[in-house]
Image (cartoon, rainbow, N blue to C red; front, side):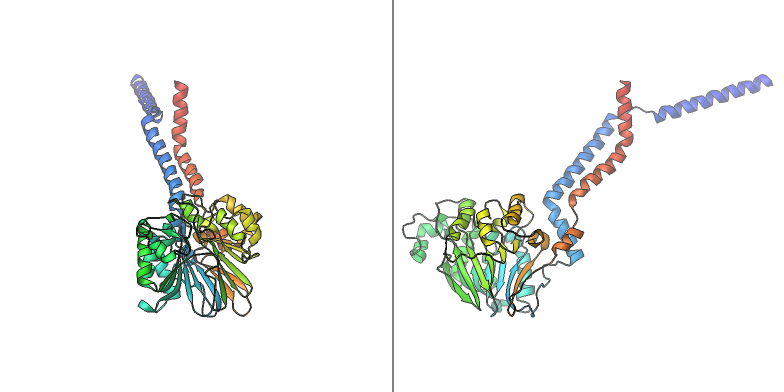
Length: 422
């Protein structure tokens, strides 16, 4: 009896040891390199996706947050009827320029029209804030200025000409192949083209459509030219400060087209707002030599979306602006560049909190009061709010590293054990 009991105990012990051994074997199953490789691949793909999203889709996420937290809707009005005086709307059309100037007497001047892909943003802002309740031919744009012929400035030119009542168009000295072939350019602008053969050529679809429609729908078409187009509108003196040299050389490159970009100043109640389009440093240096070029201005629209090709130290030092506004969207060019932002502070003397961009601030309006001459910058999102609320999307990368690191901890231990055994 005692022998049987001992045998049973021994059998139980053997079974328990076998079970324990099996459990240990299950716990110490060999490291699976295939599974680890799949997890690692998934990890790096996720990090890459977040990085790409940060670079290319960040504005979409940011815009969603802005609209829902700050109410920076395209159609939201920033000014009221009580804001009498000069009002300059820098419309958020992404990577491009679209500026609507409202003069104290009700006259309207549109400077550039943004890229074609931003047509909805442009039309919604105009119809909600400028032409609310007004339809058809009553939506009057008295002056439509195209600073130069690049797509992010003239993309919606045909749309405006066909859908709004446009008075006078001011065009750049950049001509399509059809205009040059038929010499229409010389017929209309021979005075400006004397001794210059051939003119700057630009033949993209957007510019062809715009040059066609301006002669069909506008009342008049004139050429941008420094000093020749100056005029007083509702107490605001408007000066054309560029182009000075009408043509630099025959070229279809963007740089050459930027060389003949228009620079316009708006002077009202001892305040000056300067609109620069994509004017380059060469254009700036020529404009600086004009006796009428303003100094110590109040608002500078920074040239070429904050590119290094514009905003030279000499130019910024001469202007000494109080505020800077950059029309810019999500882009792969690095606009606005760190170099230009530093120069705005170091040479322009602009404080960081007085630098606005349409990418971060949304729609922006500069208002010069008719009675006091005080100037205010209104925006959908204020700079103080941005510092507090707008997320820095790059923070997702370290967060993902921590999460996946925790998930990988067990695999990493196994990998170390696996290597030791080998």
